[in-house]
Length: 190
Image (tube, rainbow, N blue to C red; front, side, top):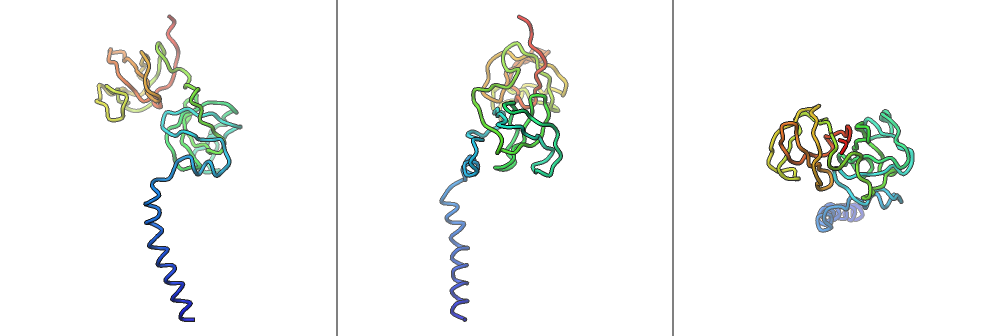
């Protein structure tokens, strides 16, 4: 009995030592891998500002759980924007009407051909975030030109990398703002 106990303890010790070493050698986990194992067409791409579609009726929830209250239901084919990844199963998103909540990734699909409604030159946006930074470059670490307040209106003036919108403020400042914090209002007639 004592030999069996020693073998079990030895095996547990080897497993405890080798598991972190093997995990470190494997590198960071692929984001889409857990989703692929769930037999879903869901997420081929991940990144804030990317646009996804609902593959079926989809509940937008207050929290990342099926027990969380439903804010609204998104229709099949309805597009929404990714804010952040909570887990492989839950993404925090913004609907086309500006509602923020969590969706189950089992029922979504990334589609690079979809552009968020309202993106493009000549469109008017309202700032939805507190003190949104207008940056000199379309990068999170770009120099800050000015901080815009919630409710400010800005005009899109050109193309920008996905997730960013090139805008001009009412004071004439031009730069890049993160699209998640802008809500499309209307298009200026040409």
